[in-house]
Length: 399
Image (tube, rainbow, N blue to C red):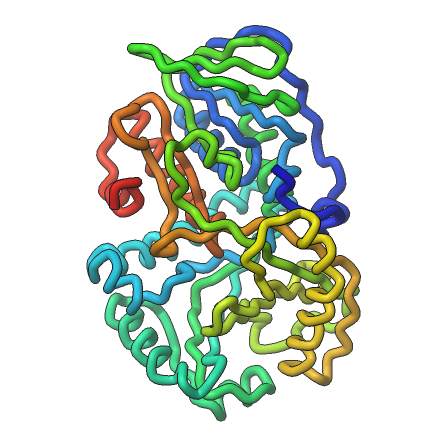
C-alpha cells in the first residue's frame, strides 16, 4: 500500500536516523510486533521495559510509512466531539475516552523527557467555531468537558480576536495539548529498546500468520519463521489485511510546512489550532519556527488522484491560512499527502479480535493516532502480562 507522497517534512529534516538489519534467521520471541512506526515503537518499548522479550519487524525502513508523514499534534480530543460521542458510546465511556487522552499526553511527555530529539513541547489547543451555526454545539461541548474536570476556557468572538487576531464566532481553549516529532520519537524508542534486549528488523515482510494452541508463528517473504507467544499488529492502515472485516474508512489528507520564520511566537502561546468544520483545518508550529497546516481531506485513496491533487490542495491550504492570518508571510517549503483513517465513533480499536487470544491489534485510527497508540501500549502491556485494564473495554472490536 502506498501510504504517502514523497518528501514529508520530518523525513527530509532528520534523514535516516538509524538502520536496522533484515531478518536472516528463524527467531523465537515472547511478543512479535508487526509494524515499526510510532504505534509499534510505543507498544514494543513499553513491553521490553517490562522485561518482555520483544521483536519488531517492518517491511519498510523504520518509521518510513505513515509515521514519517504524521503532523503529530497531540490532543486529548477525538475527531468526534464529546457531546456527540456520548450519544454513540454512552456518557461514561465518552468521558473516560477523553480523560485517557489527557493522561496519554502526560505519559508521552514523560517518555520524551528521556529523548531530546523527540521534539515534545506542551501547547494549549484551541478549537474555533467555523460558522455561527456551530456556536451552540461548541458551547455544549465546552460545558460537557468542563463538567468532567477538563481545564478548558470559553472564548467569545472578542476573545478570539484578542488572542489570535482573526474573526470567528467563539472558541474553546484547552490547557492540555502538545506537539512531537513522531519520526524521531520512533527511532529514539527503538534504539533505547535495543539496550533492553529489543530486536528490530526492517525490510522483513510477513506473508502468513499461523495460530497454534499456545503460540503463533509467522513466515517472512524470505522464508524465515518467527515463533511468538503473542503477536501485536501495529502496522497502521495496512493492518486491515489481518482482519476479516473492515473497521475503518480511508481517505486522503494533505499538509504543508512553511519556510522558517525569524519570529518564535505567531499567536497565543503557539497553540494548536483546529476548527469545528469537517474536514477540519489544523495548524501547529515546529521547533525550528515553521508553521504547519493540514486538512482539505478527500474521500478517495487513489495514488494517482492524490498525486494530481497535491499542488492544488497545497494552494488551498495556503489560501485558508491567509484568511486567518493575512499578516503572516507564509511561503510553502514542503508539501505532502498521505492516507488517513477514521472509525464509526472516532475511537481506536485495541485488543483481540474475536476468540483469537494470541493476536492483539493496536489500531490508532483518527486524528490523534499517537495518543491512541500510547493508550494501546498501556492496554496491550497489561493484557499480555495478565493484568486487568478497565480501558480495554472502551476500544474492543465488538462495541
